[in-house]
Image (cartoon, rainbow, N blue to C red; front, side, top):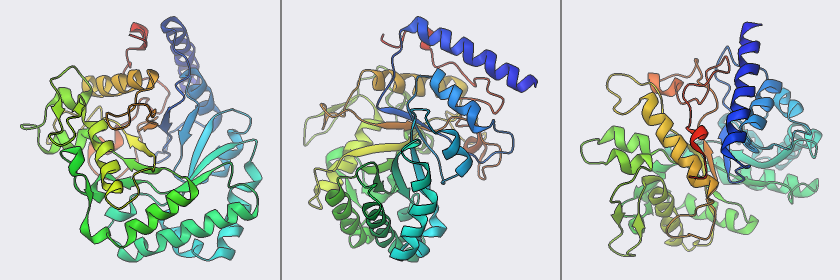
Length: 353
């Protein structure tokens, strides 16, 4: 009961702060709702939280029926995911239609499923067999959506790690890894044909942590800094995230698919890390995500596509205590599992500033 009371108190306080700051709904900003924890609140409480944050978009890592039922009539748009291990099965059109009929169709339109993410970071997982399943599974799932009349409500894509790029700096040098030269055009052709975006998981934190002596912390945090100029395009970049996104756009253009939209399916900054993890602090996490939110509120695009609002999903809503790996992996959350904030994004200062 104490945890529930603290969550309700936090929500009321946060709603008051947001009202004071004049924050409107940030239509291009969502948050990843991971569930790898044994102490997370029920989905009904998560909906209250998202409404209080004025967020209208979230992304989950499965098709959890409890969440999909809870989000019905909530007005929150949701991205669902096909787990990697399901791809070999869903290559079969018959299996794909059964999956859509049981995992998607019963919940719409009450639950606003806007996208199906097929797998996650497959190109950097090292399993070449799994990679070969990706596009056929996407084709089958999309065909199933067409068959049941849902293709106009949601698109099918697949989030990739930034490690799909062989080169990312300067952005105009962006190019996919050579070993992806066969499969990547197939994916891009599917995305172009279905008018779906290319999803990228982009974390300036990892770049800074890997080379803190050469990479500016302010550049990765969206803080004021001299920035960098791409010597070929003369475009000026004042933060790493936008440079990473534009590198992906250039890489796609070199394969003949320069018109595909890029969306950021994950980005964030950990509040705690191992001693060897440089920059993983509450202070830096608050600055990164607070500055990112302000950029999103202004509806910014990247230097290469300044008139196209960049859609971004922050990682993550909660700290997740059962995630494997270094300490940072369990501490990307805006909130602790009991609903209290890990840090304040500075919204009380006025998001419009």
